[in-house]
Image 1 (tube, rainbow, N blue to C red):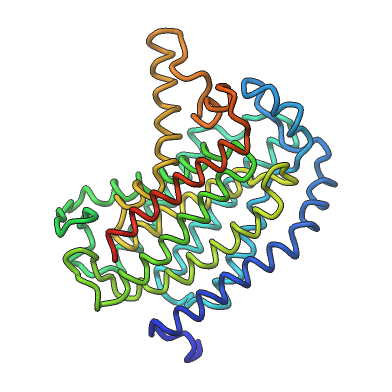
Image 2 (cartoon, rainbow, N blue to C red):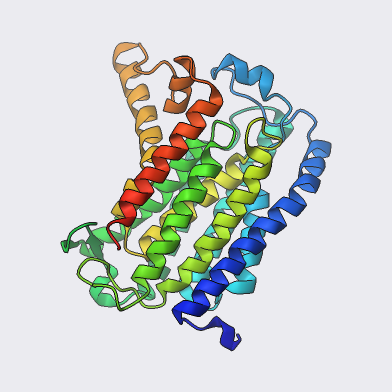
Length: 348
């Protein structure tokens, strides 16, 4: 597009900073108007789970949802302005954001209009998620060198394995799994948004490593042009932090499926592009634990008729133990930050 869009590390750093600042400023400046608009179209706000913490029914009633529009809108604008959208890695990330975002939006709008916590069926959601993930994995594979396309790399070591045809379904599970894991984690004011901001920032650093050939390829796989994903990660980080301006307790707006499904999916896409799928599980350990807690709760209840946790996902379990909402959120943020720093040790 213009010479500014070169892959030289110094220009990528500059564009990443500008993408972050642009997304942050746009989300902060437009968030208030979005909240006012959403309140007008739905005075009842997001329906609150009746089987969730009773305090939420009182405290969070009437809060508008679909706040993910703020993150997606500001981030996509920043990507259009500062990232090279002609690259496969960039445009497929943007497409995944849109497809999953539209899916989440459709679910949110039905919830709001019909005032039900359950709108789109799980089967329909999963079908759309898997189809979009299959497309993304094939596009990413076409843009990745054949020698590393289907390899799975293990952090902190020079060990990797060739998954061959198994890699495609594996990567699809990574993307759709990340999408649903973030969705499950979006249950407290600022929780998912803060953790996403931390992990996106960490993967921005990983993108600089995988896209720069000076790094040791035996530990950090060199993926040509993947350094451009640093700009994408910076834009998403800025959008998430700007959203937190309105989402930390007491939240004026919720992320909704519009944000959680799409941001989780693009996080999985970034991990697949950078060939660091296992690193995603390390840095996003809280997302993993949230998902596993729900699985344990469901299986245990079916087997015994009793609950393993007081409430699932696990952030609600800690609330039932007497932790304040802020304590749960800040503790989970700190765990995510620590896990991200540990994960970054594998690339430096």
